[in-house]
Length: 450
Figure 1 (cartoon, helix red, strand yellow):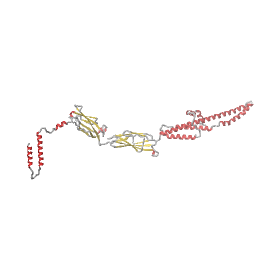
Figure 2 (cartoon, rainbow, N blue to C red):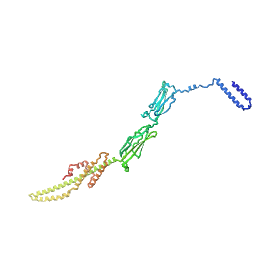
Figure 3 (cartoon, rainbow, N blue to C red):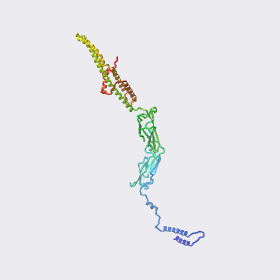
Figure 4 (cartoon, rainbow, N blue to C red):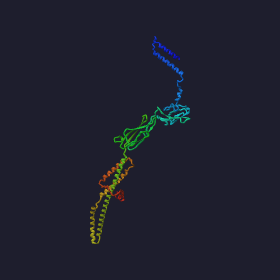
């Protein structure tokens, strides 16, 4: 009230002042200062006298906004640890920790938590990684929870990730399950496995290259895949030196950071015989050989029958001539004149039968010689075919034996070019062999010592 009375007095005093010799103060400024003084006085009076105006209590506001749900205050969603380092991380909740306990699910080896105070501890020992229990650069997702001891419904389940790394990187290696240098022949099959020595970061993919294009091989895309390939019989060309071709196979493995390692396999492919084609060629020649032998046997049978028939006819004429001469002698010694006259005629008749014999059944000398030649040729061909038989499907001398059969067959055909060969006959192979190997035929054409 004192300030207010002073304000009234000052205001009336100002109204009477029109000029001050040193400071020019207008009535407007003085009125503004008076208003400020009045407002200050009124505010002091209100806060000190009026009980309806007061500043709210801070503690009351905090009580109204207090968090009633359980939660973890300082959970870190991602941890990164170096090998041989130690983790000590204290987890906190917004409640009294003495009424709660902590637990982990699906935690990596060595990670622990204190169930009473939530202290998370871990020591990333190198032995865990060398034994394969832990992996580098792999996100391990760990489930963590906290629960009220008295109220099971009050709990929090969440998760975080932990990753381990090392600055000592052991490179992963790629190697083959065979030696680095191989020697094979055309037609052979080569197969081996591409293996990996896992280092800090495993090999994720494998690329394949060769110094010359190849085909019909199995692809290798990852570790433990098998490479399989068989060179064709035309792989080695005539222009290749030493009848072999060099092939370089390169298997390049890379990890997720594109660190690479290369495995090289050197293969020397030698020129080799195409056994399937060579076997087919041999079988074809052997079949022709056997067919020609059967044809010669049938020709021999026909020649031998002609010789046999002629010999029989000539023998009949010889016996008739001999009988006529003998009859003439007998009749000449008879007492009857008629018998003696017949005895004189019969020897002449016997002499007359000789030219008839030569005309009707001339000697088959050429046929006899041809039959002997054909028989000897058949024996030689059968022996040659037996001696050049295969010792298996991959007989190393198959080309030599095939050539031998071809040469022998050609030589025999030239030698017997004048012998008439009938490709069609009415005798089976068993009948021909039975006739050809009969004792009579063998005795007839057997060479006799003088």
